[in-house]
Length: 449
Image (cartoon, rainbow, N blue to C red):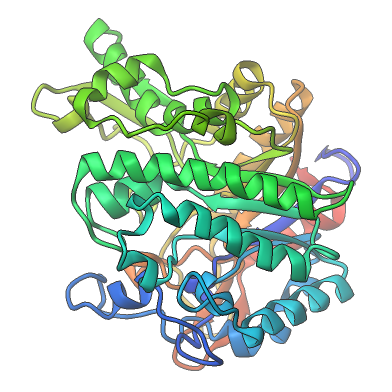
């Protein structure tokens, strides 16, 4: 096919999901209770009053879902493990049935020619660990490393790509500072300590995964990152943008890749900074093999003395398209971000581990889902990724969020991100137009121009 933006040979096209968002079976086969089970069962926490009790019923329908991925031609599948399926109380006895489930899933993926990429933590902390303080308790970082060892012992012979955490920024800020996500705590000082313990647990797990792995084992972490632009060229707005970048991006990138927290933010946070023990930063900055990048939009900010801790506020950009999440569609931000990561941090390999968009999807009378806006969103982002590769960024793969519509955390089932439509009443799956388009992209290993 002429006029195709071709990707390098071996580029991994994939899809991504998370355990709590799709699995259901919340109390089956010995699974323990997670903070999201607790949170979603608490009145008033989820927009539509729903829970992840059933979600997409993937726990029972995983064979069907692997068949869907195979039909789409995806080369890799990024999914998360539910800690509570493996160690129901977070520490202590291991649940063999939980390990058996992921064992079957990994074998099924490999039989279908799909590489498994495992995320060990995608927000669903065992409630028993939350009861002793959750991530604010330093001991939990060590329990996480123990859990990593249990999973790696069982699956490491077949799984070669591991991610410790998904979006520690969200866990810390949305879960512990603002309370919009589980565990629903509102304490900024605690949130910053949580962020530190998440990074510490990452470093501890990196060592475990490397020790238990082989020459092919690759370990990374997934960060949600956004370029930050000032609303105007004023010095105040530029300073606000730098602060926002510091708290959102550099607070997590610098410890991992530089071995220290950004000095400007450490000073800005003042009395709120976390307790850091001797040796912590060398654990956190253990060398990783790749960085997973979740990119959805940019931030445009303005200085605002009334704007909370950072003294800034986000700005709506006139004339821009916005998704159902209220996020600006800004593909150029992906290129900008990838180039910056390559330049500033010299990361050996990068994967886009999530990118996608929520739009209102409807099934037409002929049983199809015409989601042209999502298709356009993906096309434009793929093209920016292609440009970044041409400019020397070591981008090795791209995971679309998400394989299918699912439980969108505090939004419940009100937002659809999938390239596969899910009818939650019947659990019927319907590949959307964007899914069929993605199938062609994968087959061509390139984007039609």
